[in-house]
Amino acid sequence: MSDTLYCSGIMSVDESVLTTSDDANGSASPSRVPVRSRLAAWLPLAAAVLGLLSFLLVRGSLTDDGYITLSYAKNLALHGEWALVPGSVANSATSPLDVLLLGFLTFVTRISGSAHPVLALGALTVLNSAAIGWAWARLTRRFGLSPWVGVLGLLLVIANPFLLSATGLEVLLVPAVLLWLVVAALEKRPVLFGAVAALTVLTRLDLVVFVLVIAFSTAAIRKKFWTAVATAVVVSAPWFLTSWFALGSFIPDTLVIKQDQEGLFGAWGYFSGPMMYFLYLPFTVMVAFASALVGVTVLLGWLALRFARRWDDFPRLAPVVGLGAGGVVYYIVYSTLGVGPYHWYYVTPIVSTASFAVLMIGVWHAETRKRPKLNRVPPLVALGLGGAVALANVGVDLAQGVPWPSPVIFGNWASSTDYARVGRELGARLQGKSVAGPGEIGTLAYYCDCQILDVFSDRSQVTMIVNKRLAEDGFFSKTILRINYHWFKRLPLRKPDYRLLYDKGPGHGPDQWTVYSAAKGVGHFTLVPFDR
Image (cartoon, rainbow, N blue to C red; front, side):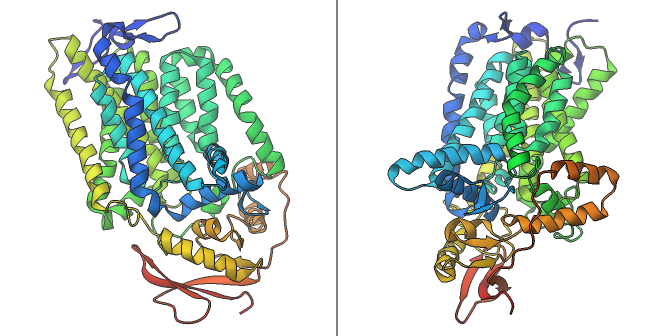
């Protein structure tokens, strides 16, 4: 069979084209495309600038869950505690790596005399974006892509309104580690792959799906599988052992917490969630998911070609295909876990399949420049449409206002500004006493610096969930829970001094705070004694 396959304008990629000129370490030499390589070297800087602009756009409108991460980082930097509220150890931070990085940067900001977690978040946003740009620079040089393909990949990720609406969470760290998994696999570097794999599962444990799919789809990693595994264990074991013994659970509590919230979104679940968002933001959902849908289509077409014909050069693109396949598997796995359709849960499958689509179409376009017989129009049209989608994403972002008054995807009871006001006044009012949270805790905890008791901050409430699951779940689930919570100290339920309640409409009276939310309208919080 010929080393190049033509089918409906889609072609295989000759190994010499894929690797340009490989050195002994599997790294691509830029000598064949010096101008493009020089332009690609600017991608990290371009990404950092995009990250900075995106942060300046959203910094005043962070979601409540973003402030949960900021509260963890603040307490880590100021008190050395893994806690959402001071003095109460918790394990509800889904992304340990994100908290550790943000906590370190927050600690650095203390040179000014006080901690500035939001400033640290801006720095981390820029660094994560630069890491994404650096990965695209490596991929661009390796495949001989136009640098504008890399810019397109950056825009489709960084400008996505679902991602920007979750700023403060690990949404930019996710595409950074996933793209570096692909880079390490393409460059046949099992030690680097293992190190990045460790950072990937420390970013989110559920990203192990991508680690496994990319590892087993790449011959170079399979051959050195145990080298990669050993490296991953060495890098990640210190945290996971600390979490298991000191914090009482190997897996963060957020898994059982979110599973316990079944029914919170009514009939909507993770699988059907995009339709829920589509019903009230149709255009936003279309442009946010468009590149992901293209990625799924490209993946199905690629797999059809791969298994329909013998294709000796296919493993050269296996890590890239693994990125797209991982996004699909991730969506399927999450659809079976019984978690709600929180908008940040969709960021991972969106950015992975979108990046895969851009890479594959970019390789297709690169081939047409080197093989005159190939039709250049289809990949150019596809990239042009991708550019239109990216611009549509930017348009949605800017239409929200500059800077954002609230996130595009938003459901909190109050704006971050109103929550900040309530938090500060609540802290002064409580004078060291505790209060049962209203259901949203992140921003209040960040500004209150007080004992707000909530399932995310109070592990006595986690005890109730774990005990319930152990009594009701099947054998397999019980076994996993018993192992995970083997060192968990089960605490008696704490009784707070006050309760903070939310209701619609303005508040009139003592210990009431009127707030406004773009999603909920005018409402108010009321502080009452717990026993009332």
